[in-house]
Image 1 (cartoon, helix red, strand yellow):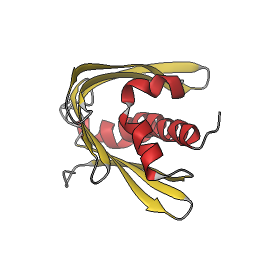
Image 2 (spheres, helix red, strand yellow):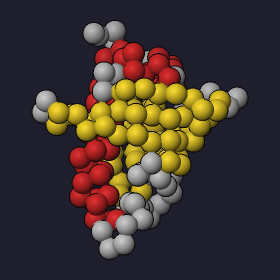
Image 3 (cartoon, one colour):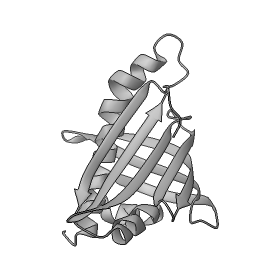
Image 4 (cartoon, one colour):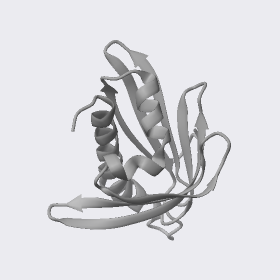
Length: 159
């Protein structure tokens, strides 16, 4: 992951399932809407041999009874040896953001870590402030925490 970025958003938890199970759910992003009600759609525009490719994602960030729609385009790579799933945002307001999902065996399951790093949108004067004050803690964390919780539930066999 690139270092020295202004915004760092970390979501992590222990999932009560083996690494292989949660890693498999995380890498099959086109199936996320089946497990994650906040995802409107996930579509591959291009597929790569590693299971990644160019992927278009759209999710809602709930605010009470209202949903704020979000959209982004990412270059996704899958590293089975690590294991890790990485995204580089190449379209949308979060262009330039790097995301890394990592998976480590621990007692009782798998420690899953999602790290987002970014310098913010290219808005004069306020880009990094928007990233660190609003986009990262409100939108990125709001969506990533729900994504991790939903995939954890699926991996653990909970509804």
